[in-house]
Image 1 (cartoon, rainbow, N blue to C red):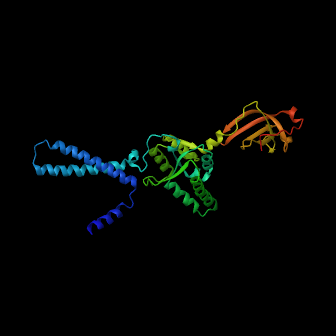
Image 2: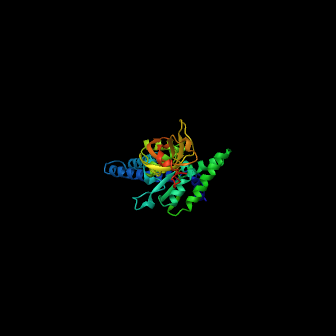
Image 3: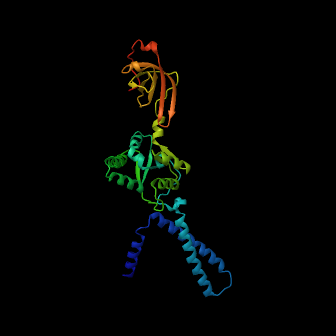
Length: 305
């Protein structure tokens, strides 16, 4: 009866304790007990009263066990051993872990990347990210609610992708309030990169020494490369901001500004690239008309929408 009561009390006390805290406590307790045993073993060689020796042994054991537990719990984030995910040396790509943040889950392109086989491994979604997604999905704002639900749908889709494994990481990191700060801390603990579209998280993580995989950077790097002097056939869609300018677009949405092309709006023209400008908003291409070819009103297939 007494043992059952003790078990019930222990279960109630440990209900709010995470597995990582519990494992840290046990490691610290064992280390503290070992240190106390070593010291009392040395004291055994010093002549003293047996009762006094027993008191010293008890005091040292309790003190070092307590200190070991406290130090282990406070420093648990610095030791991969005390977290509920033990990582060994990687043997192949499938052992790689990637942390997903809220923005990249809602964005959804991560699912397509995994389906093509370019990204394989364990996709880890922390519980606090999942909670944030659920809060967005329950929002009173229609736009936010749709974004949150799309994120949850994307997680379901990722579960069916061959070569990708979805893992929910349960550690709440309650001592940290901001989701971005929690992601950075968890990435440092697990020694893994974060996949994100968040510009601010990107900057903070890099300052903290955490590797970042940005889906937007990947998309920009996959755009067709054009060089000054290259010739293209494009469709002039609208008027430019400056006088007589025409605007066309590459298949990926990159804007092309063509001088003296206003009169060709709604037609295909041949152009020569003069310069390529990379801005924070993306890439912009400037070009001139190739008049002698345009006079023939060429209808050759073009690369642009």
